[in-house]
Image (cartoon, rainbow, N blue to C red; front, side, top):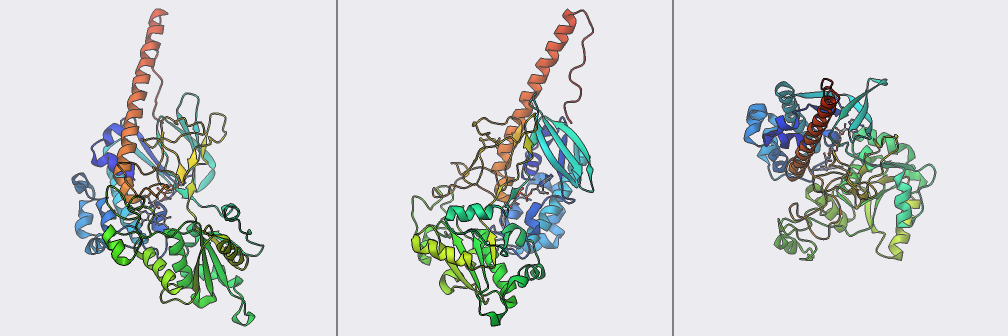
Length: 465
Ligand SMILES: Cc1cc2nc3c(=O)[nH]c(=O)nc-3n(C[C@H](O)[C@H](O)[C@H](O)COP(=O)(O)OP(=O)(O)OC[C@H]3O[C@@H](n4cnc5c(N)ncnc54)[C@H](O)[C@@H]3O)c2cc1C
């Protein structure tokens, strides 16, 4: 949506869709992705960042009325500096996206396949992409479309099998049999009742005098959000303790250096401050609700107002901490992977059907300045663009960020602004190159036919789908 919204507001949609544009998603309703599925999770962006994605004079004719009449929009606008619930953000983004999509379908050569899941994207010998997909209600009926250019944003994945790798990296034992292992991504989408139903069966009764502990691996926004959900929903169901095992210092976000110093936070002016915004830990710092949870854990050893004790363990800070992490993990009845996302990219295969291994570094797929992924040899996959969870751009002089941050930049606002712009530039460039190549091919074919005395053949049929 960041790309589509950007293409529309910059007046380039007609150019992007001049040979047809197809939107495919396995969901029935579009616009929010997974963001709208998280239950009781407060965003790490403020309301005005999300609302800014819906502001442009070109949007007025499409969904300008949302700004005036929609309750949810009004609610977010009334507290622009507050962090909203992601479920509400998802609802608003869906509303705007669906309105924009309806407008695009009506005015441009745009089609939508909702409820259709992509099985594989094959990069064929002539550089085009064969997209194999099926209707989620009829999985056996496979179909295929061909496209010159693909913007592939399938989101990120957290796989439960990665828990073992995380433990090996931390040099602590793997969870034993009978321990519930899961990902924060799955758990954050459960209701309170579902969370209780998941863990209550493995909690020992109070009389058994055993500590019911859940270990969370990770130290970012998701890890602290997960901590709050577990403490709040399972405190009354038998959970005694939460251990958060992380391997780099917990960083906090501040709007200014002065604010950080007044708060008593140590700031490294070279590594912690974004040169563009002057914010402290702009990308890596915990914000808003996650900030409050972390502070409460650091000062009181629990999430304020909840029962379970919470222990923070920096497993990379020394042997005693590593040993403590090992003990906690061994004595846990649940282990939650909350250590970032990998790309949902296994769908990309070469002309023989073998997976194209892409260069994965520092929290995401490596991409060039237009968002084109690099393969293992550092070669760009032409015609393919990707951003979003699990892939994405690293900080650079235009995007900014603190020097200490080496991960990827994810955020709805930046998808709709700088990143949307880069993808649009790349897509238009790819389409222009394709058009030149096709024209040259048609001229060459016509020349050949003329020399052979025959009638010129038609150029390649429909290059669109
Ligand atoms: C817990 C959490 C909180 C976050 N909070 C914020 C926040 O407050 N502010 C912020 O700016 N960012 C936040 N982010 C980061 C990120 O900006 C959002 O998660 C963002 O919505 C990610 O978008 P995405 O497109 O990468 O992935 P997704 O939202 O997962 O979208 C992927 C889409 O691809 C579709 N799809 C997947 N596989 C297939 C397939 N095979 N075939 C067809 N369709 C498919 C899915 O149906 C989905 O619609 C948060 C992330 C997490 C995990």
